[in-house]
Length: 259
Picture 1 (spheres, rainbow, N blue to C red):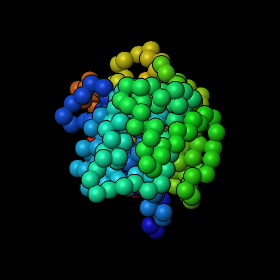
Picture 2: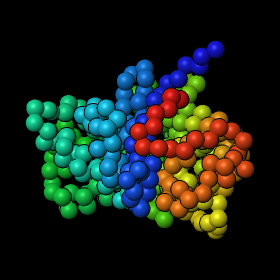
Picture 3: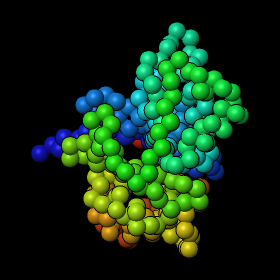
């Protein structure tokens, strides 16, 4: 029996600040099938180019969900807004909501100081919405967020519609709140920054710690992403499988999955 899916996920950037040709910095396009809404989960450097390579249009984006404001997760936000404002023959209609953790308003204000007040004066309007440890309805889906464990404030996000659920970790170390957020997720889009040999890391996950977490949380499928170059030197999928007996895939830029 074919299972009806509610989402399509397009990996735009599966890498980190350590740039490589194969992996752009963190960004993912989430498409809600029934409503045709399209949102970005983070918008690291290379996101705009990857959108075009995927055959997607940045002018169609309905919202952006930011996990945290480290550069490899937000570097293309200003270029995206600049393109939205200045693309000839195009005028966006409708406010663009940008969701993120506490402190997002202050961070965005500093962007305007650096890049110009046009960021606060777009014709369509940008709405900065801080969320932490709460759930809400947005465009027919249930969005939940919990504060996770990183060197700056970070949100993990859960998206649910019908019987489909996706959880995105952003950057985080092992923590109870991630176990809570990821519980029984159909797809856990999880950072896997380092191989199992890297021990004692508090603010990132390894192939071993993410596998342990996914097993306890009873996740159905695990998509490993946000991989530093040293992950390419070992089989992190096999390392993860020693701890997690569910399905595991490695993210690749432009990879598509139905959820």
